[in-house]
Every structure is written in structure tokens, then in C-alpha cells.
Amino acid sequence: MSAQPRATKRQRTAPDIQASKGIGRLAVLTAYDYPTGLLADEAGADIILVGDSLGMVCLGLPDTLGVTMDDMIHHTKAVSRAVKEALVVGDMPFLSYQTSIETAVANAGRFLQQAGARAVKLEGGAEFVPHIQAMLAAGIPVMGHIGLTPQQVARLGGFKAQGKTARAASQLVRDAKALAEAGCFAIVLEAVPAEVAERITREIDIPTIGIGAGPDCDGQVLVFHDVLGLCPGLRPSFVKQYADLWTPAREALAAYCEEVRAGAFPAPAQTRRMDAEELKEFGGMKEYGDA
Ligand code: KIV
Image (cartoon, rainbow, N blue to C red; front, side, top):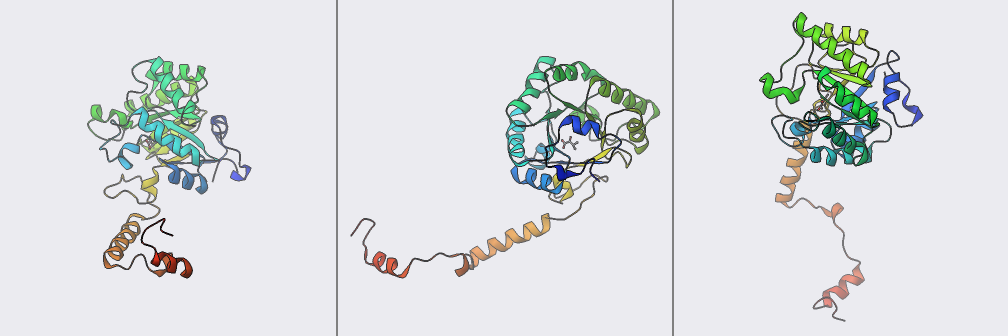
């Protein structure tokens, strides 16, 4: 169930999302361009995240490290044009905020100024509190992201679940509290045990949005292409695929290729013919302009 009835038609804001804590569950989807933004918005998502998962699901990259600010701005612009009701959040890519507070504010600002997003998300814990505070001071709402943070894939040696030991879980609780106290309006918890997510959700006063974090978060997020089965190959065990659109899409495209080769497309129904009089005149002409 959405946190608030979506009949209101007013576009969601970061304060709306923050205020929904304890009222209902938030449905969050990623989107990467105009049609995916339109579909996610029409489907009723509360937040549409233009994730840096863009690299993997749209750009054919092995991970998110190769995604640039320019990539993110380009795609966020397209999503923002489509979305009328959800809050659009732009995901800050690798090295767009880690190197300095000034860089972080300037890049976060681009999402709002150039791309139509109304909030940004960044990966990381307490170490980014100064960056978050500077963004908030500039008027940029920030969503946190802890647990598995894919921009750390090289250091972690793969996409590995986090917070599995008592010590690591306690660190996640501390990070979540630091992000909430810094002023984040929500926090993504990725690939952490359900017990850890449940405790964080209970102990902080902003919504938690889980992905691979069990049922007790204040909301859930899934990648658009995973929900619709648009990504061939392996998908994480925590993903629920609600449709297989890859197979019918490939079959439809193959049918088109076959019909073109067989001369079956275009058929009379897809063919425009000239008016009989015009055709007669046209047949008598040597070339265009010949009266
Ligand atoms: O990049 C992304 O899509 C994300 C979500 C999976 C939370 O960070």
C-alpha cells in the first residue's frame, strides 16, 4: 500500500516521503528514460530513482563504476520529463561526491538544476555526513544508501551481502543513525539481513527502503528491468520478477525480421497508396516538376 493515496495528483516531495514514516509502505522503482519513467509513474511508484544501475541494465557495463555524471544527467532529464507524481531521485555516481564536499554539492546541484530531479541519493555511512550537511544547506534533499554499496565493488571483491556479523550489523545501525541525524529524508538498505533492517527501521525516524533487506523496511525498491524480466541472465535471489517481457519482446522482434525477409511486411494494412487520379498523372510524368 502506498504511504498516502495517490489520487492527490500532486508530485511527491522529499518532506512528503519523510513524513510517511509509520503511515504505510513506500513502493520505489528505478527508471532510466522517458518510457520507463512514464511506466513507473503510471504504475504508482512513490519514488522513482534514476539509479546508477543504469550502467548495468542500460549501458552494458559490468558494474556501476563506469557511470559518469553526464550519463546520469542525460538519463535523469528524460525520466523527469515523464514523471508527474513520484519524487524523482538522481543517484550520485562513482567519484561524483567522494573527492570533496564542494564537488559533492556542485554535482548534486546539477541533478536539480539541469535534470529535474528533486533529491539525490549517495552511497556511504557516517563518513559522508559533512557532504550531506553541505548539500542540505544548499537546498538539496539527500537519500542515504548503506549495506551493500555497489560503488565499493572493487574493494569488496564482488557484490556481497553486508552486516552479517554482530559487529558489522552494529556499524550499520550507527551509520543509519548518523545519516538520519544529518538530515537524510530516507535511507536505502541493500543486501543486509532482515533482522538488521528491522532494527534500523525501528531505531530511526526516517523511512528505510529495502532491497534484499527483508519485509520490515518502510518501503521496498526494485530495479525496473528486474521486475519486468528485461535483463537476461542471473538475477539476485532477493529480486521478484513480476513478468517475463524479454521472451515475448525477442519473439516479436524475430517475427518482424522474418516477415521483412519474407516480404510479408509491410502488408496492405501498413501500406499507403496514391489517389487514383494522382497516380495516373504521376505515371505520365518523367520526373518531379514535369508538367
Ligand atoms: O542504482 C540503483 O538502482 C540503486 C538501487 C538498487 C537502490 O542504487
